[in-house]
Image (cartoon, rainbow, N blue to C red; front, side):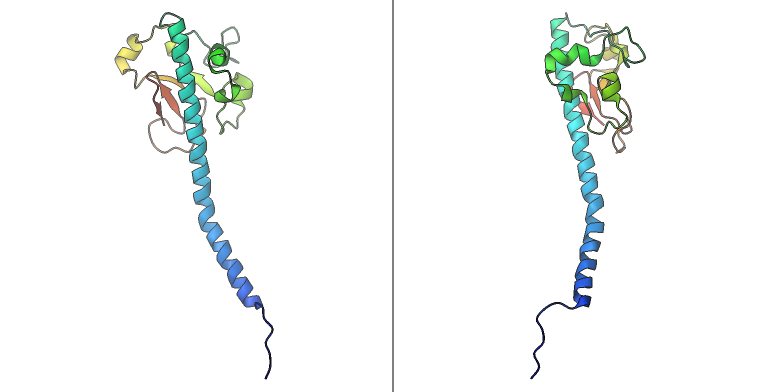
Length: 167
């Protein structure tokens, strides 16, 4: 009677490695997409917090929005969004979108652009009355940082004057 060695054959090991490789190929795009959506949600949360900070600013300044540079590097004499809201948020990380790979946070002080159309206007001004506060953008990503899911704003997160965040 011959005794066979306990163990796996080369073919069995290769089959198992092939199956693991196939499963990894199927799951990696799904996991990558989930991570991108998590970063988009993180960015949307930042915008929501910044809109709340802006509401506190407006309450402190007779219901008037500040006059801010949309891009501080292009308007060096104007105050930035970052400098205006930092005393209300106390944490620089709120100004950085995790998908900002173009260094807007580093260069501009924020990954988010201020809607210069609101500069110096009172809250519920004609601009908000025409579009409605739920459709008047307050701040948004500088660029299309996120995958476009079709919502009218490309790959940008947008926070509106009423505080809701859209895509």
